[in-house]
Amino acid sequence: PGSGKTTLAHEILKRIVESKSFDEVVMSTVSQTPDVKNIQGQLAEKLGLKLEEETIEGRAVMLQKRLKGTKSILVLLDDVWDYDELKKIGLPSVKYHIGCKILFTSRDRHLFSNEMCINKIFEIKVLEEDESWNLFEATMGGKIIDEACDLKPTASQVVRECQGLPLA
Image (cartoon, helix red, strand yellow):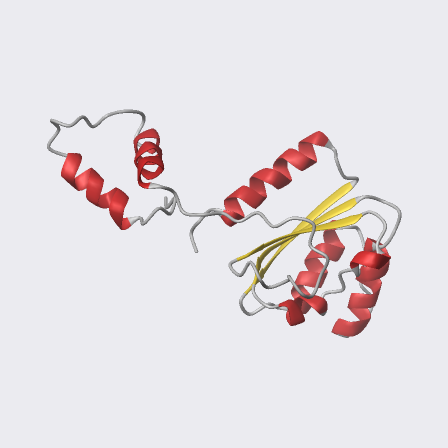
């Protein structure tokens, strides 16, 4: 939690859109208690797809057909907690899609290991103490605290309490 997965995913998404690496780029937040119908609706709307089916299963079939098309599509699903819930959305199986790539963010790096053909896992680790200090200083506008400063102990405590997480 708080390691910057969502922020990094948004930055990746922004750069991919700018580079036009994919014909279409869509995103949805899944969360610990996903509303599958809402996620399907968000993805479909961004893909210009009208989901006429009412059932989750019917909507999943329509969404899957759209994602299996010939266009190159990147789907970003943020904050994924449960693979079984994710399957209900309608993502195409790896062996049946043509140009659809899926980028997930999750707190659990083992969530998909046995279920999907994962090309690459990028693990975001907490910052080292010196990296945390450098980030703190950069956030504060540069090197503002020297060894003689009265704020040094307080600033050091703030950095320690963040425990290597890039908290705002």
